[in-house]
Amino acid sequence: MAALNIKALLKNIVAYKASDLHLVSRSEPQIRIDGKLVALDMDKLSGKDIEEMCYTLITDKQKKDLEENKELDFAIMFPDIGRFRANYYYTMNGDVAAAFRIIPIEIPSLDDLKAPEIFKDITKREKGLILVTGPTGSGKSTTLAAMLNEINLTEHKHIITIEDPVEFVHENKRSLFSHRNVGEDTKSFAKGLKFSLREDPDVILVGEMRDRETISTAITAAETGHLVFATLHTNSAVQTVNRIVDSFDGPEQVQVRNMLATSLYAVISQSLLPKTGGGRVAIHEILINNSAISNLIRENKIHQIYSQMQLNQSKTGMLTQTQAMMKFLRTNSISKDDAIRYSTQPQELINNIGI
Image (cartoon, rainbow, N blue to C red; front, side, top):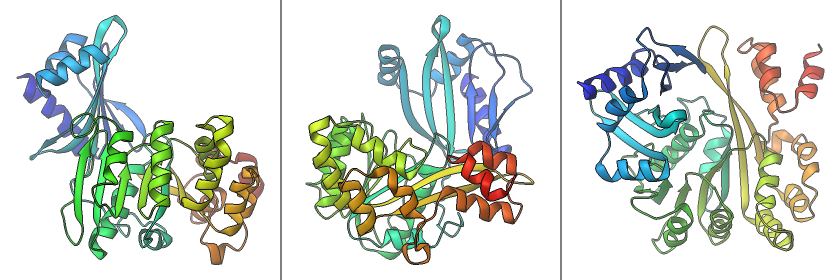
């Protein structure tokens, strides 16, 4: 019965076109629709209810991992419902809680996402570091899946993905995919990335650059002739560069800046805003590395990158978040209040709106 209950709850994500399901004790099950949590018309759950339901989906080894580490990440597929990324964790009083996010089985194309045309140009690169950044739930994984799908449709490449857990599972079309789960197929992002260099990859996806070793190896891989995609939880291009450099100690930062100046190709900072009339719309800030940006990184003038991004954009393909938001504001696709709320440069945006 418990297994049927959890499946019934997961079916609600699909039925309501939601993105997430949350199970937390002393609350009704809640789903996220267009970025907002909505409680389902059901009884409140106890920690025991959640444990009984959620334990039906995992192995004894996973149960042990959860009880030892107090967290568990995994992905699960139900042929009649869909694929989900799941996280189990403990809350106060030792209650098990869970969060499920739906992963589309059909890989979206860049055209499906109405992504900027420059995204297709980015996927044609032979080498370099491409970062897709943004807060949790901003659609980073979907954008990356669509970019890898573009390569899969057009290029004969070996693509290795290292994720925790693997989210989108690509069918081999022109390209060959090797999907690896951290914890099951490799011990860590850093190890998986290090040994991937011996596995003849053309393209490497690193689910998240969590630590200094992973960041360093990703930069090295990009420097040595691989196209490397990765994510960071940063909100802007400038913040992304700073986060990478600040991950290293003072004496190492000069070397990292030099390596990053050479290997970085693009930073796409993404946020999802409520769309007028329902749904959500993706706002992209786009940094493309060129000689001017490269020099600013190398010379530790990272604070000047933003103003450089605003120059000769018809040639560089760069775009600031403010400019992207203004495009959607002109078509009334987003509200002024939401734009200001989500903006990384609110005063600049207010000045542009003319409030």
